[in-house]
Image (cartoon, rainbow, N blue to C red; front, side):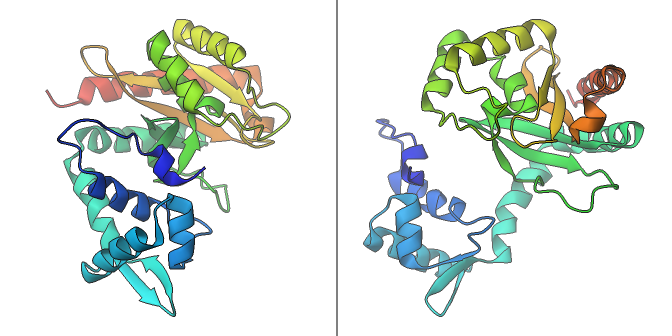
Length: 261
């Protein structure tokens, strides 16, 4: 599936397709795709070579992209786009200190995620100091249906929207434990909505589990999800789950309390 298929075609007269295409080019770069040829960018985005070329050369002129031996890569200037969001987002500012405290209390990696289409985006993360490395970092996109924070956020949607998201999702089997049946996922989401939290074991990766809860604003609208993730051998114990869930729920309440009016 090409990335252009991920861009919802809008019939609104105010929708500017050229901007949507530009962002599809920027988003096609990532882990294992740090530098690409024009042909590779066109294939991944679903754009014609001519359109991809014009966008890449425009981004190069604006210094968001650099070219070396017919391969294109993003420059550090792209971070300006993220910084504009980070510096204006009061939720991130409020949550960061609370996530730090939660991570220290639990000894696990703490993160905050938001829903973006069929995926979640990790927009804040405090890694576990005991981990040498982790594939999950700020900006990581993960399939919502197979993750604890993703299920927490999907569970807050109305039934029609859940049906729409699941229909658009490529329900891959990441491990033998991944739930990929639509009806089973809908039942799980109903349970998550009723319980107010979610625990996922070995569905995205073997020996990786997570527990998540939602963050609300003062009007009880869901803003994001916060979670702990770590080895299943630690998170799967009932006593640990209860401990981590209590920390997350307290952290969520504290973030809501401290949000600016």
